Length: 222
Image (cartoon, rainbow, N blue to C red; front, side, top):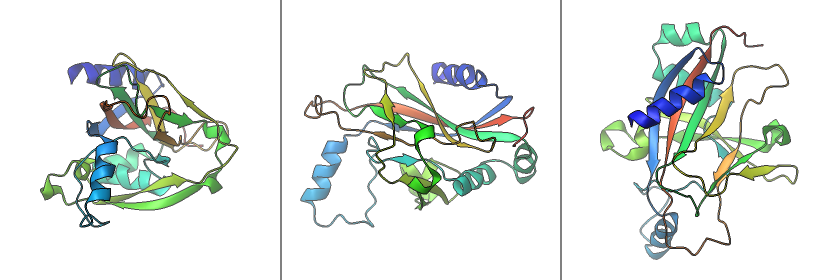
């Protein structure tokens, strides 16, 4: 974990940030294919079931909406600190890294922010399990809920991915940026996806994502 933390510090500060607060992390070691088979085979599993599996997320999303980013900020920092740091530019950045590699199944793709209109994004409320359940998703943020974005399909979206990523490589995924200068990317839709060439391989992608509140105290919001 120390190695991961050093990577985070090096890469986040290379963005020009003056302060970083890591508020959560999540590891993915479970098979999406096996989970989907279990759901299909067991009629007792429904939308209220507690499925404590952390699999690759095969849906296009941004981890926080604009409102959800503010919820995360306020839930994970003392009120006076959050108020002070939000007066200048701040953002939420995920650091995504394979635990084992190379990644050949369920690679992570990112969408060029310039190709995504605000109208393409759908706000969705994420209500988390109670903290005393010990479920993995309950620790994504200190709060009980937050709002995220799903994305509608558009032929204008431009997608990219790094093939066969190894544990020596990381992706920084910007989920939110408070700046509104009209030229800086403020959010990046992303998703795991099924590669037809590797979809039948009996392997499970293992990865970790570390979620960071990132502050630029020397930069205005506008």
